[in-house]
Length: 634
Ligand code: WTA
Image (cartoon, rainbow, N blue to C red; front, side, top):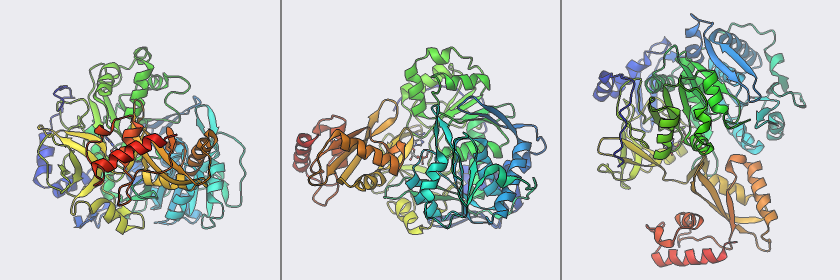
């Protein structure tokens, strides 16, 4: 693999932690758990009844207590430095956040929300989103945050699946200067769903909204509630949240995380990866609607008592220098973003970041997709000025927290551009062949996790069988990540993208099955197949092959209609980059769509590039399907 090595670190050299983890991973995680505040200790560190793990059984803990109560020695310390897209600014201290959360917790309780009830949150990136999350956690309600770019029907599916009693939203949110009418979307989503008892509406943009019988304005909801509400001592395995994510099957899956194991994982990795100090100003650009925002915006920084910047809007609005302006103004020391954002910044040109003082930065992170070595080098040189380690963190919604990453807070190791380096201590990750045997170094295979880890999902909400089949059936005893990877001779991991039917567009997960089923719900389309092709900025973009119903004319109007339909059904993130109409999809004799062939066609490759045979189809079969498809494309 790449022999280029950057010997950069912070000089930390804690070899004992890795040695500890190597000796006994269960005892190791037990030691890490002690850095949290527990109401009661556990009787069993790990109950492992494959594939179900329960961590710190018998222990009692509360996430909100660990994020707030423990930091009240210094209530004036800044927790959140918030910047709205419209330039508005707010500083929220740990004391203020503590007070707001307790009030909101009391209000939730008095509206009838009980331990274990689900609460859906559909808010822009405002501090109240964090207040809502921590209030649910405080009383033991399970939050389910939906990214504010999702459509009404996506919200509806999630509210129904989670059976949420309460929905929290805002009148609107700012995006690129315009107002996204969130309340209106929620109204459409909840039509006829009588089990939703209350919709709490934050005033953010001041746009006109209609308030129905069950709707309450945020300020009225919290008014007159006392600012004191003790955190509920919850069992360690009590679910903290459901986060819906795209999978290989039609409907999004509700990934369910516990409390004690998850917090142990998040707290440890946040400290190890970011070497967090009291003097740091941490800025993660992820939206809280995705897992990065849950783990490393909402929970990680707060349980570690960090000061963070929270930004509401688009990274290039109103100008291409917005990010660097924020970094300079708040003197950000740790910056955590995505390869897609970096590729975009890189395209804008070096002169933009070069005209800002970025000397406060000491650590740079990335997450969500493979980072190309040239983008890594750009990040390292232009943004970090060759001084800052790049923390390329590999993980998933399901893993809860980072699994493979350089950890400068723990140790100084050489970095290789494009590699996420080593697994974190206490996890067992390997690259295996199709039949599950570990592959020799430098060989591409499937990434698996061979032992339970504390941030591991509990199950899929309401569907243990699907949990078993999605993650544990390909390699019995191993968790299947769905990623391709290579482990090199030095033990460094190179993540090579998804091996399953999940696309990563601008770092967002989109299931091909979900998208295809949305497309065929359009009245003019009978069949569809989607695939991803490489893109300079977004990493991957969506190409859709559609078979119109008999008698339907293929026009630009139809193309537009289908796109509108997808945006309406799922949300703008699932919009295809290109749509091809065909009269027949290429399939194997067993009826499976030849996806790699579609990919080859969409990327303008020759059939010879489709090197391995698709799902057992014969070469001549693939060849004729290829020729036929090329002829048909409109
Ligand atoms: C991909 C995001 C390469 C991977 C935290 C994984 C990455 C999926 C990296 C999970 C990385 C995440 N390098 N690929 N550093 N981080 N991925 O659930 O394919 O949105 O399986 O979680 O993102 O996406 P998810």
